[in-house]
Image (cartoon, rainbow, N blue to C red; front, side, top):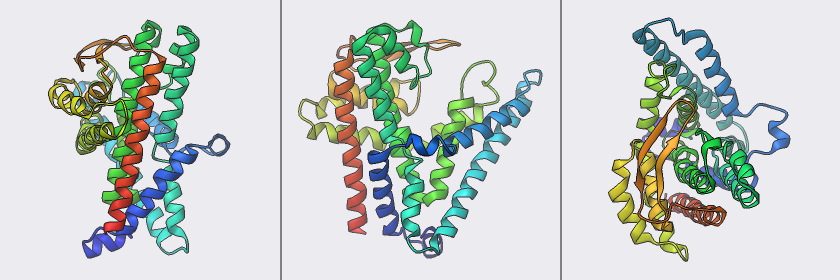
Length: 330
C-alpha cells in the first residue's frame, strides 16, 4: 500500500482503514501485560538503543560542539533505522494474505491512547485515597519531581499529561501513519523516544540532545495543532465542556507556552474544563515557571482528572470517527 502510494502518487484509502483498526485495537486492548512481559515493547527496544548510544557517545569531557554532533548522528541513525524497519515490515506484509490485519496490530502497539487513559485513571484513584499514593502514581506519567507536589499539583500534572500526550501518543502517531505508513509511524516513535530520553535542557543533554529536541518540535508541529482543534470540537459535543472557551483560551495562551506544541492541547483542555494549567513546575534539575494556561481553577482534585479523562475519550472517539470518515470518502 505504501509502495503503491509512492509510485502512483495517491494516498491509499486502505491506510485509513488500517489506522482506524489500529486505534480501535489500542483502545480495546492497550499494551497487554502478558505479551510485553514476554517480549520487549517496540518503544522499549528503541529506548535501549538510545541508551546505548548515550553511554557510548555522550562523553561529558568533550566540548559542546562535539557532543552536539554526536547527538545529531545518534538521532539520525536511530530514526533512519526505525524507518527502515517500518519499510521492511510493510514490504513483507504487502504480499501476505491478511497482512493488513497484522499491520494494524503492529501500528496499534505504537499508539498510546489506552495506556495513557489507564495511567491517568490510576492517578485519580490513588489521589482519592491519599496524597502519597497520588504522588507515587503520577510519577509514572510525568518527569517532574512528584515529591514536591501537593494534591492540586498532582491533579494538574495528570491533566497536563493527558492533554499533552493526546498529541504525542495518539494524534501524532496517527498523522504520521496516515502520511507515510509504518515507516513514518516508526520514525515518529523513534523521534519521540529520543526527545524523552535525551532532549532535556540539563547540562548532560543540552548539547547532546539538541537535534533530537528540535526534531521532535518539528514533527509535532502540525499534530499538536490538529489535537488542539479536535479538543475544541469534542468540547462542543461533551456535556459540561465549553468549546468557545477552549477555542479562545487556546488561541490566546498556547503561543505563550515555552513549548511550541504542548500549549495547544493544555490551553484547549484548560478552557474547555474551566481549569488553570502549567505555572510553576519543578523537575529534578530545574524549576520552570510557565505562564498559566486558562483563567479557571488551579486547585484541582481527583474528580477533575476524571473530567479530563471524559474529554480525552470524547476527543479520541472524534479522531477515530474522522479517520473512518476519510476511509469512506476515499
